Image 1: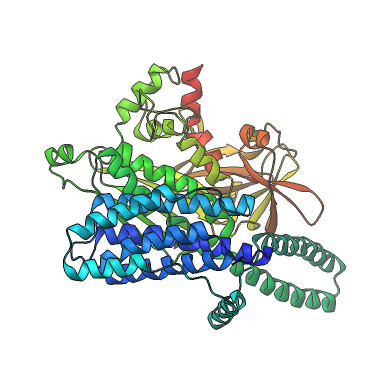
Image 2 (image 1 turned 180 degrees about the horizontal axis):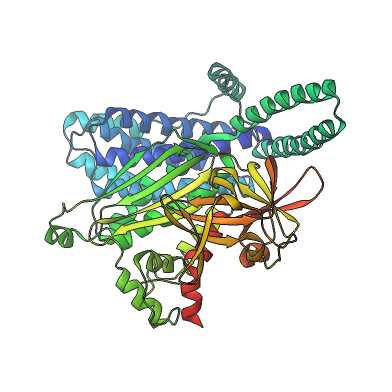
Length: 558
């Protein structure tokens, strides 16, 4: 019988299939880890049956038959106390990879073109092997599963109607991501226009107009907040691929790794969650390949043979912090420095631990002498930093040699509308991300001095490096003498910026800037102010890095 080929239903199938395949991948990893976890076993059966039913309804018979073959193997889970062996699990993951490829073929060509017959034959052979060694009850269960056929509903509309009723019962609806992006863009334009009206009302001095604009502002902020919440999704969407990656990579490298995930329900902007998948996968590969030792090496070091990998997400202020922590060998900073010197990246100058770790973010840098399937190409930490910086975030690494490493990603909760402190330097407006701003002062209120040729400001807690913001962009202060100071922070580092004028707090609609500008200056984006001026959004993390770390590298290269 022909399936449903309406484009609306195809999009629904693709969305559901991709989501179900990720869930099934994670559930199979869980079943392998703990065969007695009945909740995971139930998930495996339920999700596999959903994929089969949807594929059969849509007329994608090859997907349905392959999933049915997997169900036959899953039947063994409920009959065998010891779970499935490595061979069976490996074959199930081969099936998962093929199913994912077939779904993407449907997305690209409207049909699945991969022939699963060979893999289905291997599944039947696997079942026969288990059947020969099983008891009568198991053989009966497998036989019943094997003779069962893939049933295609006679009335697909009934299935679709049931799906609609189920969606209504959950009080949720799927919306195209492009529509959410358009809605957010329109809200952003509203924010710009609102700011302009607010400024005109203040200049006009009409108290009734000011009051009316205040009401408009509160109403539009409510709409803005609601749109932001609509775009928020659990970060587990990005975490979903990691258990399978940890399982496959640890087996490939002959290591034992225990994965623990915390904060799955932590919410972040959908665009950021999508963009975090690749950086997270790279950091997990790093932790397993470079960090966690082989079992015999861990035993010799007095550690458990199984390494621990913790991936955690949490809200902290206006940010989401994602940490990847392993209890492996840590970073050998001496080896990092030696490798950088060998490649001519640095000279023979002394480097402290923080500066040595910063070398890992150098494009093309790798501590591996040879290229493997996992690492050694030098395409890594710099790509992670670039991806995170593209969303106004930050990456930091802490490590203790012999004990382990923690990498932290800090991402703003919202991306398109940015609360910022706008300042002026050399007559130009600049925006400082508000959650990076620590304190503000008049210059006359602080004590400036010089230490080792570097201007610093003295606070009760110690000295802090000072940078003229205009000079950071190769400009000269218009007024001749800056009047204000703003201290900004990134992780555990702080920097004081001197500026000419404090404009005030604003909500800005962020816009991307050309890669050339981001590469040459500490800028993460741009924004149009109510006055029509363009303000650069200062990348505080990059400015701090260039001020505190890069001068040493630059001097070494020269």
